[in-house]
Image (cartoon, rainbow, N blue to C red; front, side):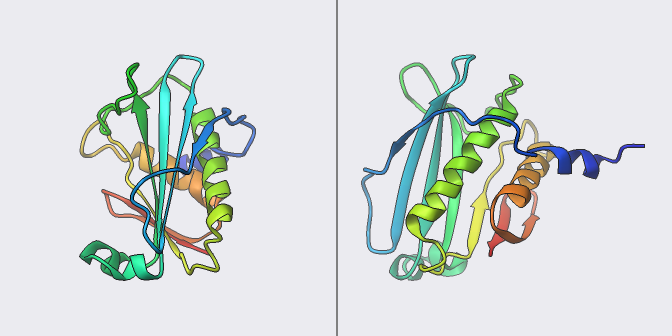
Length: 170
């Protein structure tokens, strides 16, 4: 009998090839202690994805109530864009069978971003991801994302509170 946990562990074993993507590091709103990066890629089905990476450390992690509460962290947000370049509703769930390549792309870009910002030197020790859901009780995407994160990123611990994934980086 195959257990769901075993299946999830196999997910993201690394054989899916990442899509090629464009990097945009020239984003407004930078302050001391903030890092931003967007990447853009398109699937063979024509879905345009934008993945946003945000990191807050040092002075930025001390400003504002959210940053003080969370400390030094980085966050990954992703969704699709319509043909005019506007972000689709973040709650819309795209399900066209390209998940493995999409996740391979996001993981590759996250690893590059962490290296680029030198997260260890800056004391960034947490990661947050807010998975989309098709309904409130649907945690399938969160479980899948957690399997990918655990397997491919430098994670010491990870948990999900029903709204967001919180991971501690090594």
